[in-house]
Image (spheres, rainbow, N blue to C red):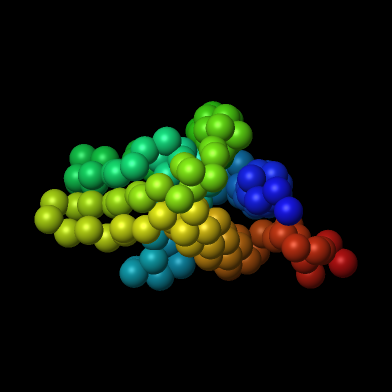
Length: 165
């Protein structure tokens, strides 16, 4: 099995699923809406889903360490068009970087540090699996719940949804 080929295929499939869900957000959705006071706003969650698929993937692939500071928070999108534009740009960059990965690079270490705390310290492959792909699927599921609570149709991710039957 060519693991690199499999990782690219999986990323492409998950990216398409993410694209479908982001496109399902209504054009006039209130990106400040929250289903609960402790929840992220729709815009923050949609931006996080997009960034996980794009920017986070790119950082994992192209850097060995990410030193986080409070100024690094991404700007939350205020509308669907800006969200989709950012998503497509970031995904294009991530796909280019993914195509350049080698087994040696997958085995190299990656750290996520905030001040004197190390939050992630694992091989890039594990970071990719857990903090890019799994993390993406988790938050995409949350976004699907937001859309359902807004009475919007949910596109199928791994087969048809109840709205497509």
